[in-house]
Length: 170
Ligand code: K1U
Ligand code: ZN
Image (cartoon, rainbow, N blue to C red):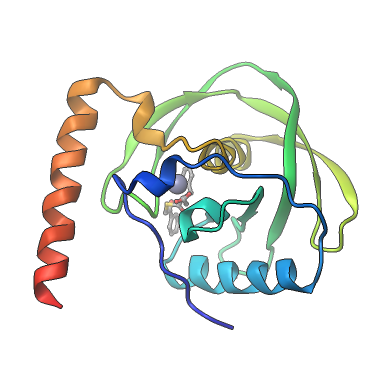
């Protein structure tokens, strides 16, 4: 297994639109393993392939404390959504920033699992938030894009400064 590099906002590669996975094979399953290791190490509760510079429709989520309930969504599609909820979101590509975002309260998602088997899932609460957040990554959208231009520009400036300091320390 391998730890992958997570792209940091405002890296332009985070705005790439992901392509569907044509075949769920061993290469995809290896990427799932590497992404899971990367997400657990961060630590985070979700990760999209976009964030590790792989522009395919693959996201993973694990909301368990024990890190033993990995959910894999390949070519996910939201087929129904209802209501609204506000949640203070974070993002491994925007470290240290937590902001409220309004999303659907409940969703129904269809996807393939790591064996290529189609499944349907009804999700609410944090799971619904996380699926929507990760699926946005696949569309090239980062959660700060829901914020005001003023807030987004402040975050961008903070991140650029943080990245410069990180590079200088190397
Ligand atoms: O997409 C990502 O960068 C992952 C992100 C997922 C997410 C969190 C909260 C709301 C929406 C989406 C994170 O995992 S940020 C880190 C985080 O929330 C967390 C980390 C450790 C323990 C518990 C939560
Ligand atoms: Zn994110």
